[in-house]
Image 1: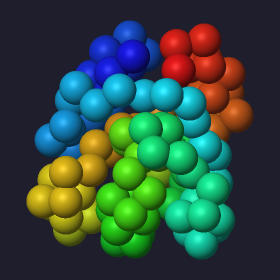
Image 2: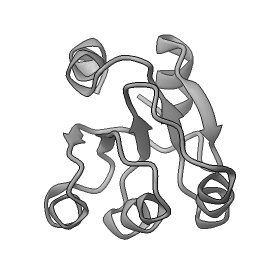
Image 3: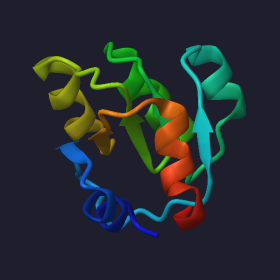
Length: 108
């Protein structure tokens, strides 16, 4: 499933979607950036509560399809601008990472 289709199906808020047709193949949940860099696979969707500037860099380095920020956490406008510049898709979920993963698991 593409990032755009996933966002539409689950009504995730879109903060940055420069690459809407990126395919999602699996997921990774984590907030320790070094672990995400070493364990998330290319084309995963990364579920996190992190909102600082480093999420755009880690997402780009890990080649994840999107960052899905959970629990209603929200990055500031500088993070969103950087994500757009780096080609990083960022979505928001008000639900917990666990509940969000359970919801989307059959589609990824």
